[in-house]
Figure 1 (cartoon, rainbow, N blue to C red):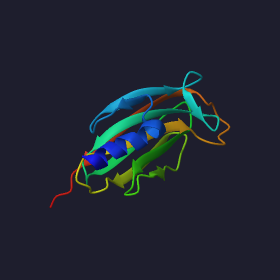
Figure 2: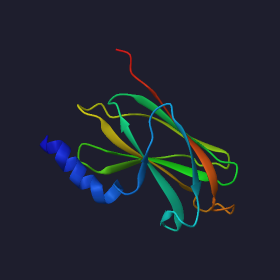
Figure 3: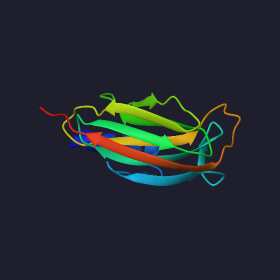
Figure 4: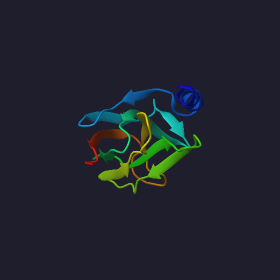
Length: 137
């Protein structure tokens, strides 16, 4: 109980802002543009995924209008943010990862942003898809 409370307190300032929930099997439509939050001059949207420990997950982002970048953030045993960074492309970016095998659900933040250094449009629509596969033991 204490560990859970500490995790929630530590993550609130870092990633607790304006996250839309996403669940496995869901595909959502989003848009990056002038009204979005920015980091290093790049617009981004965050999605919150309450993951089952040990699950294998895959996130796919597709856009016909902009080069999207995909980042996955989760906490390690020391409560630091650990990013997984996608390759970024004009049409599709995806990441596959295994959720840390801990005793309780894991909060993961999925960030979709414009691709750094891309000369193309910095605004546009995208689609994000989340899938999950449980380990068979």
